[in-house]
Image 1: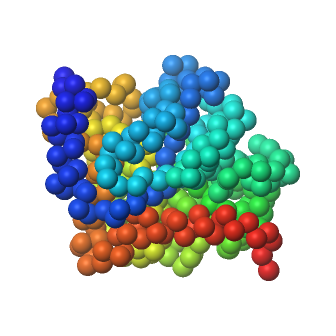
Image 2 (image 1 turned 180 degrees about the horizontal axis):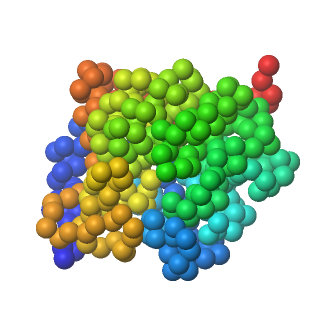
Image 3 (image 1 turned 180 degrees about the vertical axis):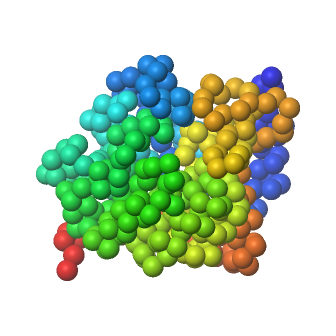
Length: 348
């Protein structure tokens, strides 16, 4: 097995300098990044053998310092910024993880989202956190592990208390939609539409392009949000250019946000699909996980770069401009965050 630092020097960095760096703007905003420390966890889902717990095995510690170090490592000579939040599952103590994320906001290049969801905290307490901290919105809580979402609906995940605050303060609502069909499910589509139309000042961001990693799913999904100007897609862990192309053809470049899902996208490899499900093909090193296949015989670099290349390849296919790419990688997200921090109170 090649030493990671040797691989970085001999493979990752030359690939970045030659192929990635010329394609991206001087400032990068990663709209989907995690950070946590082990002390926040009530349990480690994959070690506890929780249902769905092996769906995504990742680092038990991924501090603010580790995230920023990865940003410097993956984007040398660029300014790395990130929208950050903790682990949004029952594995964590939400008070501890939200306190930690609020602390991350002391770094002006980090934009914290608190974990929130239907019935988790009283509206007054959530509003207090928003006003006292440098909080830009919510990462919606997942009441399940991995793919054990059962019959959870969008309306079960986030309620009127959270959405009223999002409406009043133009907050980001970052939503990982439930269900096996993701945003391609008509019931999920109806749930997203209800939020967007009922709370038009909320800035709703669908994580992982609505979890549509497969082009066929994106084709069935994206038409449901075309007319919803306050619904955006983040690109975290989406590495298929055709998926991105289909999204851009429908919603345009102003509603696509670059995102990574670090620390997950720090693996070296690529997310592909087999039949109707994604598979992560990676170099040896990460722990075993569901839908993760390791091979020492592939040449690979950070998944972060594969996400970037998917966006650029799709943009080129559609003839998009350099300013469109700058918007996707930075300006679109900053515009959303600037609206959120105006904190103007209730809107007419």
